[in-house]
Amino acid sequence: MSTDYQQARAALGARLRELRVSRPGGPLTGSELAVHLGWPQSKISKLENGRQTATLEDLRLWASATGHPDAYDELRARLQGFESHVRSWRRQLASGHRPVQDTWNELVAGASTIHEWEPTMVSGMLQTADYARHVFVRYAELQNSVRDTEEAVRSRMKRQEWLYRPGKKLHVLMWEAALRTLICPPSVLAAQLDRLTGVIGMDTVSLGIVPLHATVRIPPANGFWSFDGRLVITEDWHAELWLDDADTIATYQRVWQGLSESAVFGAEAQHVIAQVRRSLDVR
Image 1 (cartoon, rainbow, N blue to C red):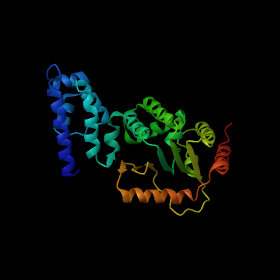
Image 2 (spheres, one colour):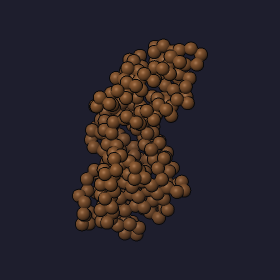
Image 3 (cartoon, rainbow, N blue to C red):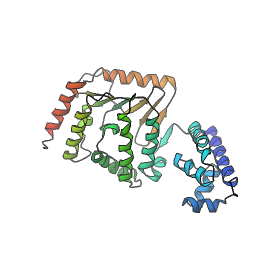
Image 4 (tube, helix red, strand yellow):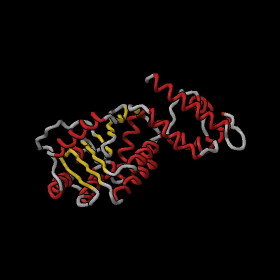
């Protein structure tokens, strides 16, 4: 973590303390604020002294509890201005999967066009609730994180409302392997594949499938999301990477374009999905 990052986090902490002591009606002590928020006293101290990075939800609650709800936008801008591009799963999942999903909901809501490559599982924007439930359970087991599965599922399902808003466009490419990954029981996967068949033809969704037998110009690797050509998010087992420099974004755009040239769309995509569906032998 860089010195600049540490200094910026300390400055945010000083601002949080300023909001606490300048509460309308009189200052709050750190202990009083901790009780009000249901947090340990140590968290108040760590945030104010720049020893812990706040989440967006932390900042929202802090602004409200200190009588400065209008300060949330400023605090959010401060955080986003210095937030590390490497966002470890350990820290992100400290409060469970739902807060991570809520952050993604906010990010998606502000985008008009999204390009996504998914090589290993069905896109979250197109998942059924049952499929998503199994995904969250498996990742909670892997990361030994809080089990807030139902809350996380509801948040992810809410994000899909974006697909029904005018002026939005989701361009998804999935490797055929993603259709076959049994991260859930076959019956759940079968229902998920039926859902994918149903979204083909939606005016807000372009779904392409790269068949396993297709010749590819780019080796399928980690999945990624590109938001309006201004931000790319990719992930590994330890962290999400948030990438916003122009050269890197251009590279990911070339990767997406190269993979799209190996994909099939429309009726051909439906045919691939139907073949996988039949192989499950589930009615």
